[in-house]
Image (cartoon, rainbow, N blue to C red):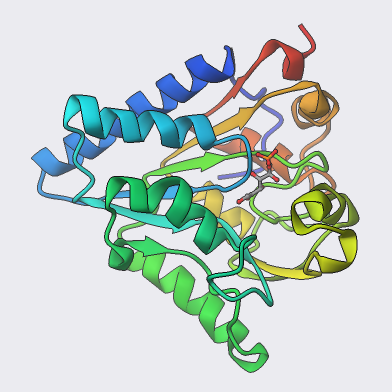
Length: 252
Ligand code: F6R
């Protein structure tokens, strides 16, 4: 796959419509895979944007007998320096917002470890890549987008061929997290993220963006020459990518 100037396919829809559409696609994937005796491998984000998708998948389990027994998940990222029980850890977010609600086995959910010893971080990241490969690769990557154009925690400057690794968080990312942490000084400075190439390896990629504060970065994601200055621009080279965004984010 080469870096492409192709436009990013866009679907304008409300947040509720986007949640239903993405959850429906995921449910179809899970059922197709189960019929074939295989696991469905999902790449999942945290943040505000995917909450409607998680709610809709919980509803589908309850009302439509959607069964998650054949699902493996890999999260995009985790703050470094946070134990799993920390209120702002992505491990805790995922358990409370999604995994515990659907009874997903912890052995089927992979999240980079926030409290891995510094000397072990590189090995931990390499192991994460191996686990994704051993699972057969990512079938479906669900992404949000940062106001600085990050995907996962691939901050501005991230290379197209980057893999799972330790990163220094960008000032915009830390500022956006400050409220949840109760102050900028409590926001970790470093994180582990899946790489751009890891994400682009997913067979299908769906990006969600809602609200006027995403408008400028969506414009740049669509119009800038693809490059590390806005990592989300690399998505334009993917063969099966779609952005689902509301009118406020699209400036319509
Ligand atoms: C979170 C992640 C980030 C977020 C992005 C948008 O796991 O990977 O890239 O998707 O920062 O966050 P929200 O949805 O809170 O606007």
